[in-house]
Image (cartoon, one colour):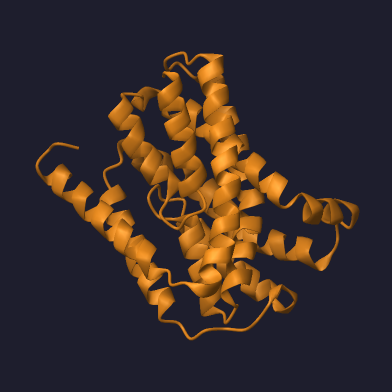
Length: 259
């Protein structure tokens, strides 16, 4: 992996992790374009470390308050929202690993994300803020996060949509969605680090990998701030149109045996 590829992959991961268009699906596409398929697990781990850094920096003040008050209401909400993804990961990890490796379903998953975003965009506008969230709300939103274990189903897209269905206002939906992703990403990294103990893929130079990680962190931070501001006043349908085009294109290429 050269430096340009590293910077591009970091940019792709940073932006698509938080834009509702699926980071894993985009990384699968670009790894194939760059001929880095065998480095998938190692690359994904380092790139997710980059976006985790972005989240930790963006939420640093709030996280510090939660560390000082570990039994606060918000901590319980995050715990309730994380449970579904933990259950799905433990029960179906081998299944998700296989479809992530082959990428055979990513076209359909992009289309599913688009349909869900369009549906959420039609939901009646809510007005509930973070202070009004309940454990039931958090578990509901977390259930959509569990669905996003599929590689090209957008985690941010589904969790924001799930929050909107509960009458939560858009800015809070995005804010809680990204906050909820911190324990999910951290847990996924622990699983990936365990699997890396037997990594036999190609060696990737430290400078290129560091650049990819820092690029993911930088663009991830920008994407978090952008999406939280964007969804407050704008529609999710523009992202839906994008993933419809992408998913349809992938299915067409797969049908011709090109991809």
